[in-house]
Amino acid sequence: MDNKVTVTIYTNLQCGDCTRFNTMLESSLLPKYRGRVQFVHRDFPLAKHAWAKAAAQIGRRFDEVACGLSSGWRTFILERIKATTVDSLPDRVREYAASVGVDPASLLPALTDEKLAAAVDADLREGQARGVVKTPTVFVNNQAFIEIFTLEEITAGIENALTQTKPVAIVTGASRGIGRGIAIELAKTHNVVATYRGRRDAAESLAAETGAAIFQCDIASRDDRQALLAFTRETFGRLDLLINNAGMAQRERNDILLASEDSFDELINTNLKGPHFLTQGAAKWMAEQGGGRIAFVTSISSYTASVNRAEYCISKAGLSMSVALYAARLAQSNIQVFEIRPGIIRTDMISAVESLYEERIANGLLPQRRMGESADCAKTVRAIADGLLDYSTGQVLNVDGGFHLRTL
Image (cartoon, rainbow, N blue to C red; front, side, top):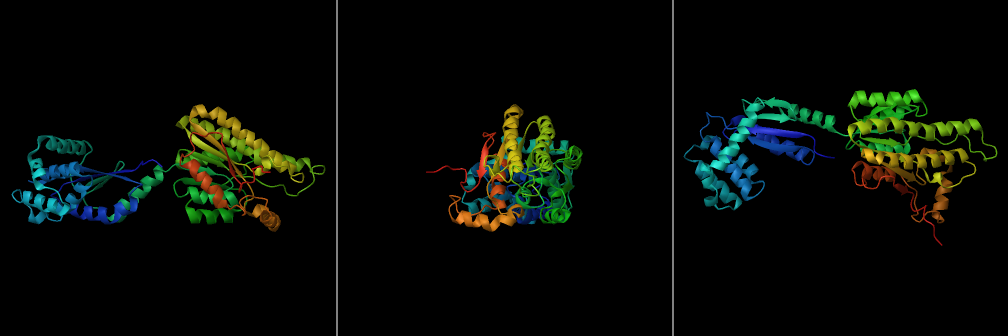
């Protein structure tokens, strides 16, 4: 995900409280948030501190010599505030330069360098424009922490900012099976809205495990679909990723000559109509935002005929076409659409026939002779969520152990 949280630090290198904050930064904040948060230092030398501006100029020269040396200089000089004066500052430069293997002669002219002085002045003016009057002052995005604050307080501010700037994903049918595996994976980087239909206990355990927001939704219901989007908008204000995973198997496996219209209608409404029209609403919202990503979890049954599961196969085949249609229509709106086509995945949906599938796999049904796991599908979603497939809209991603291959 792009860095969206910036911690801007205004410090004065002749400030005792800045020493305390720098220790907090080096020992706790940087190790915890490096790679997720951008830390930016700004010099704010107070006029009453005689050598602070010159020390800031030296820090900038150290960074010209090698990236990162100014951070060490900041720690070095803050720890020696009481032993440093205008007259002894050059000695501090020589000591630190020696410790990092730099010739002091290349650094000392920075004490009077007008270009470096102007850069420090620019930081000072920027800070004044933001209302900085004391050091340290730290902004987590636009939230200010001034002079005296605890590690717990600033950590809470960073965590809150990360939550607000995380991308948002809806995962339908997330309480169990493939959907649960996807929700667990996405919760590492996204605010997740996880839907469930009947198993609130399973949804609550997912929420406890991942922090996902749970929402009861029968995907076949127009009112429920609209309520889901409204809940997401109210709770998080945006939608970046939709995973159409919710679906069901027929309640009874019947030969196509005996299957009922009621069963057909139920599966078409749940497996095809529901995700098709949820996508319609989500796509309009994403287009307003300037982009997004959508994935449909279909099945190898979209092209594999099972005559005792006709309604299931037809619903999944229709969903594959829905993917193609939305991919073609939404490409111009910077919305990528994908089909994830699982094969035989170990979930409670196949529990009744799991042993039969295991036997057939052992006898060569799949080139990769193992049953798939929910995590296999979740890894595919990860690639979509991270934007690794953004130039592949409409792609069918087979997660099936090679079942789709035709061999002689």
